[in-house]
Length: 123
Image (cartoon, rainbow, N blue to C red; front, side, top):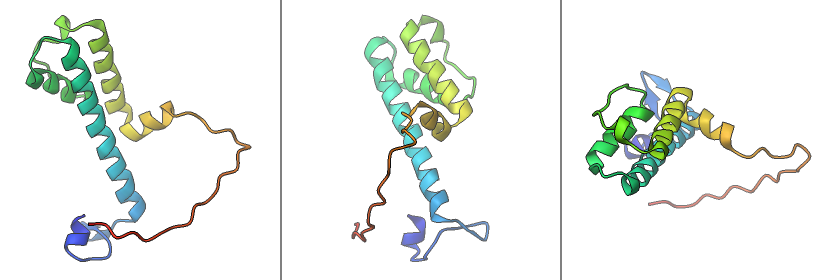
């Protein structure tokens, strides 16, 4: 997005050009982590009596494997603790690796079609 705003063809970081694949992977990881934090916060807030701020702190601390807590973890239900454990595992292994490990495997005999590319105007 910054490269498009600066009207350059590709993003540059530390005087090195980043390939589009790296940018796509970084975007995918960022969106995956954001979705995980939002989903976990909403689910836990539905079953726990704590404030949204306290739950969001616990969730972001878990996914970031920071090790900080507000002291509410012992009072959480088993399901909320399980969600936090999954977030800690996801944060440790890596979001993309975690998602790829959970996805359904395709059969090796299935043929995949390469779809034609189309240039679409965005914005």
